[in-house]
Image 1: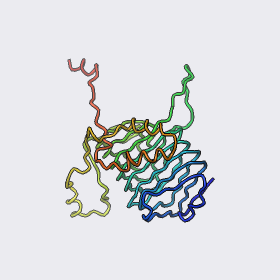
Image 2: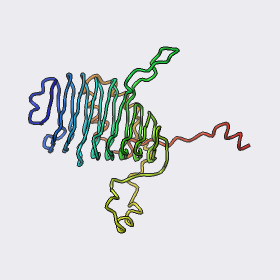
Image 3: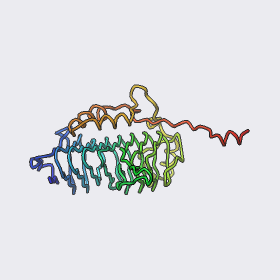
Image 4: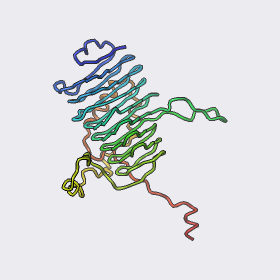
Length: 289
């Protein structure tokens, strides 16, 4: 086991690495531990950031953690197990510890400019095994999780295996997202989560101290910077991204791939998910007749 509580002790690492995207950037670990329980694991710190009251544990081998540069503090309770990736983009705001468990060689992605309340959990596994009584085949395989850019997740939400959340979307407080595909610029709530709004976006301003003047100013936003759309050239397929990562055999190969495909990709619409078209059911058509 190798434990890092200060970046001044990196020379103590023998079997694992903490790498930097910008060696001149100010990076602070405050009451934080990065714990390696295996070999050939990598933690990549892209640029300026402060990691507060956090515990990042990499269990087994060839895990990769990427933390993008951020104006806001990271607060993380993170566990990765064997050949897994957790990639968090730039300038995500965390109002409390974000809890992430990535296992069974799956991955967790969070885009840029997200807004996270407290007591939120992201889990790629259940984790105990569930089988079909008749076939004796396993029913609950683990799956990766993907969150786009500018996603707001409310207090005590749970985002479970297989969930894909498009850029500009909102997951309400105490919602449970059990492997759903959430279109961009929609809002979801409940347990299990269901769509409660569409064609919406949010901003990071807080209304807590608003008086009349601030409320009046907030009634219309200045532009459509948080409205996302499909871009044939740049919108990514989460499934293909997941498959490409799984094919890489080492943390270094995955890091090189994600630097190119994610960190260096500044396209606004890279993580757009369209609203699916609802088909009219047979019963509804018969009723109309």
